[in-house]
Image (tube, rainbow, N blue to C red; front, top):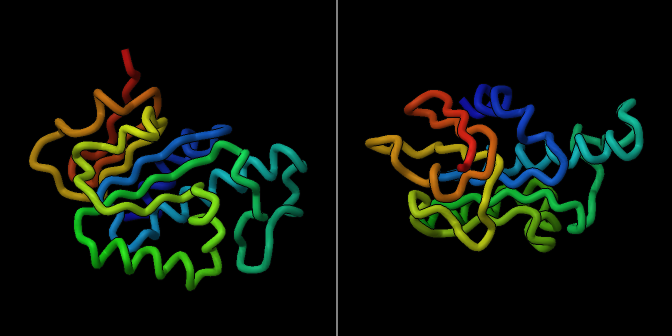
Length: 157
């Protein structure tokens, strides 16, 4: 499911300085992968794409926090936030958390995360009862891929 959502959202995720909100971030896999896609694009854009920016394991070369790339994962279950943070650290990506390129937070994702809004992409891995959640308030322009409601493409008015 994560790979499918990433493939749909890739054109928006890979735009320079994209901002992604992952509602119901669970294990952190989607959020971490989205950030790596962003940083890979920036590395290829700066250094010219032939794979030279790829490190062992296929991850994008480290970028500093000034890139503007940001992924916010928000999850209402504290244990999942702790687990996802541990997953990122085990993967050798603690610097993504330290640089605040990747935020994994406990909270009500349906309320969004206003301090970093607006977002270019909103992925809803949680299962909302309706489509009325963070879209209208926190979306700038881009894609919202809700696993329950397929894909929503929105532009903030």
